[in-house]
Image (cartoon, rainbow, N blue to C red; front, side, top):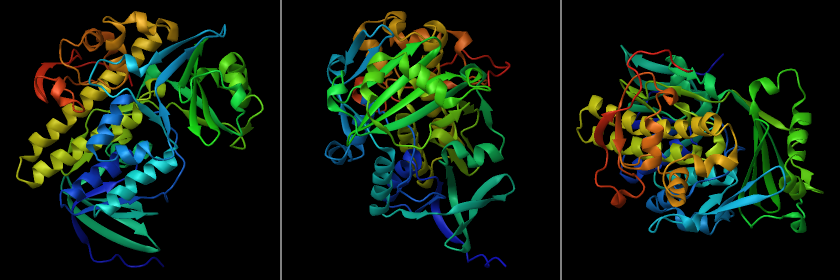
Length: 447
């Protein structure tokens, strides 16, 4: 017989999910003095894919007061990206080429340690963190979400709040329950990955810390140094390429077609018993907020990891969620605040989706064409790929991407939220409504 539900606890906000979006949102709210409950069914530290971070996130970490800890932590300092080609040649894009004023540094992280750092920071700020806590029911009053019921430590609990934030990642608690998630048919890919340890230093032909990317025959590969003699290696192919096939054989074949990565792992030991697989992982939600709730990070949208923007977008959406919730608790009209949040998140994810469409269709999945495909000089293209997803109308790469109607993702038009949230001093305006995206008012959604 299950235990009785305890008397409801009341909070300013409940955050479901303790990954980068949830821990960031809850940590900021706790520092603001708000009562916030964080629930996650996992126990931390826990394994998670997505180890490569972009340079713009470095500045966001500084804003959050975490940069010193990350710089001094067990994370790899990354100063560039190596694009390597099937003939063994390569091109290096150094972050030192970014425009003046931008931090020319990013990190590769073991997500178990990095996510644990974010969550511990939230707890130290006063967030009520409960891991191993599974949400079993969402509570409604009419159409409004007012709380959750969850199981933790063998007991059932009820918690109520002004706002519930779904930051539950791919589990998508609210996105799935409210039937908001739409799969992206244009980005149907499968990622097959492995980690290697006991790397032989003499086998590393690349600059220390570089993210290594390669492409050939419709596939692309990543190589992410994680420190402590470990390397994350992944192969991304169209989903159809795996149907009826052997994932390990496919991984080995494509790795063998990438000489510099194959050399890097020669003599190394696989960490996992077999390769791991993530399939058909790209999706979005048209609604990222509603009565009593917001949806942040991967719970709302997830894009192919080609340009390493996932953790960055999650952290930024968590930061903005905390900002608008603080405004709501301070008296701002809720619908207005939700619209502001949704515009912000959609603008960032829209830019990132378009970068992927440009890679897969505009460049035919060929890394050698990326820096020549876009308008603007090399530093501007590099700046965009490094996290400039909220650029002003005269930003040449984003202007080019937004003009391509065939690269629309969101079905409903929305006003862009322009002005860089990471380097606001580089923008004339921040969060000011601009012309709607070119998306059609009524269209068959790509997902």
